[in-house]
Every structure is written in structure tokens, then in C-alpha cells.
View 1 (cartoon, rainbow over the protein chains, first blue to last red):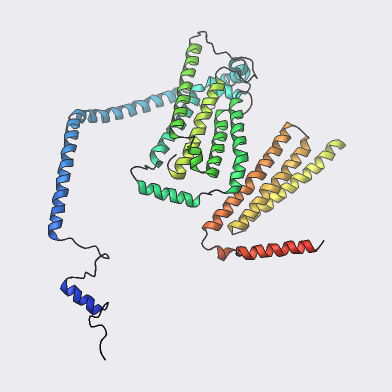
View 2 (cartoon, each protein chain N blue to C red; view 1 turned 60 degrees about the horizontal axis):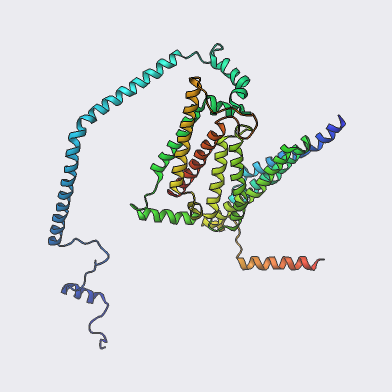
Length: 321
Length: 126
């Protein structure tokens, strides 16, 4: 019985022989191996050198900074505590001066409501008394609400935004899961969105512009517009809405709406409180361009609400515009 | 009096029927265990139940701007609700790995053959 293959090609014995000769490494490519001592020492030295350089740069920066902000830090903490205590005491003292809850002699339980109902139409020009209240008598409160929406939008942006440049891998994963669950080119959904999106956006604009005449206003109208945008986004994907709803547009719209609201209402409050003549007049109640500033303020609030809804959706959906 | 009764009785019948359909669909949503069957139950209340209630209200209050608005709401529901059901069912069938455990799956060729058979039979009958 002669052997056809005297070198035992491919058999364990041949591997063993090769391993003895140093030609074959069974763990190559399968096992994490320890590099030779010389390479490791070189690596360590290079890493040490790099960290020295980095530390030097950092120290140059922080030592200079620490000299400047070391004292400030301590003062800052003390001042923060003092400010918090001051605000607490101030609010508690204010609360102690308020009339008891449900007190019949408190102005909010008789005079204020009566005045809103009896003189609201005459003073603000809004047929919808609620719009007259929230955007004229209590416009400052509504401004706060709009700013709360803006701050919420900023917080969601900070927390949920995926940084594409810093972490391309996570972005790819997000895109893939998005593509997996997204109804891509779903004809039925696209047809429904083609019909419903223009209708809902137009209805939203109608509700915003008629806020002082009929029930509705900036908040509800803005929510309807935002819903239309989100429906369009769901049906046609981010590429189509991203073409016009860019980050820049949302930023510009929101900030300019809030700024306009702030300046317009400051002017109105200033002239009203000082009994100065103002060019803002209630106009003819019931007309579309009446009720002084309420129409414009409704538009501002509507823009802020629509942008906030759209931003929330995009952030929670894939963490970017 | 009699005229208002003529209006009131069909309106009441319609609204009662609508509420009954809604009740059956709600019962179905809680009673049925599988998504696709639940979708079927929910869609019934959304389409027929809502339509019957709105029709009853329109009959009760007569033809006005408000009743036109109610009919627009029905149209919106009839447009949006099937699309939502379709999307939910699509997601369920495309992501559930154990779909065969819950429902019978026909291969597309068999389905087409079955449909062709049905249309042939329907064509033969008249």
C-alpha cells in the first residue's frame, strides 16, 4: 500500500509539522494575539508621547482659564443659592398676599370675568372673547406659553439630535431602521396624503386667520398645519419635506415670530399703560382684519406651534431634519 | 308635534343603531386576540357606526351648515381610516415572523387562481 501523498497535504500532521517549523499559526485570524514585546513597547511610548502633547495643550488652556474662573466659580455657586432663596421667598410672600382660593370678593371672581364678557368685544374688537382674552388682556401669558414651546423644541433638539459628522455609524443604523419601518412608496398612503395634506394645511390657515372671529386660533390652527406636514412627511419621506422644511427655515420662522410677538405686544402694553395714542385700533368687529394685533399674534403663535410639532416628529423619528 | 316625531323616530333609530355598532366593535377590540382581526373590528365602528350616528344627527337637526360639517367629518374618516388600517396590517404582515401561526397564508399564485375561478363562476351564472 503505497502512499500517494507522502507530504500528508491538509492533514493535522502536516499542520503540526508546519507549526513546528514556524510556518503555520493555528490562531492566525481567529484569535486576538499578543504582539511581540518590542512592538508593544513602541506603541506604549508613542501613546505616552501623544498624551503628553495633549496634556500640555490642555494645561496651557486650562491653567490660564483656571486663574480667571477659579474665584468666579465659587462666587457663582454662592450667587446661585442666594438667587434661588430670593426667588423662593419672593414667591412665598406674594402668595401670602393673594386672596384666598374661591374668595367671592377677589377681583378674579367678579370684576375681571365681568369686564371680559361685557367690554371684551368693545375693547379688543374680537368676536371670539377667548381670543380677546389670551391675545390681548393676557397676551404676556400667551407669549410665555409660546416661549415654553420654543424652549421645549430646543431641549428636544439638544437631546435627540444625531450628530451625523461625529458618528456616521449611528446615522447609518438610524437610516436603516427608518427605511425598514417606513411605509416606502406606499401608493395608498400617498394617494390619501395627496388629498388630505392640502386640505388640512388650508384648514389650519383658515383656523389661524379666523382666530378672532370663530373658535380656534394660533394653537389649534398651528397644530392642524403641523399635522398636515407630518402626514406629507410620512407618505413621501424625508427627502421631499426636507427640501423646504430645513433647519434654517424653522429657526428663522420661530425666532422671528417670537421676536415680532414680543415687540408688537410691548408696544401695545406700553402705549396702553401710559394712555398714549396708538395706531392699533380694534376696527370693525367681525371683519377679517380687525381686532388690532390679535390676527398677527395668532399667526405668530400658529407658526411656532406648527414648527414645534414638525421638529418634534422629525427628532423622535430619526434625530435630524 | 307629529312632524317633530316623524323626524325624531328615524333619527333615534339611526343613532341607536350606530351606538350598537360602536358597542359591538368595542367589544370586538377587547375580545379578539389577534391584530388583524382587531383591525377588522375597529374599522367597523369607525366607518359604519360613526356614519349612522352622524346620519341620525343630520336627520334630527335638518339640513344646515353644521350638518354639512358633520358629513365632511364622515368623509375624512372614510378616507383616513382604511389607510390607517392598511398601514397597520402592512406593518404586521411584514414584520411578524410567526405570521403563519396566527393566520392562513396563501401563496400569491394560488390566490390569483382562486380569484380567477371565482370570476369565472360569477361569469357563468348569469
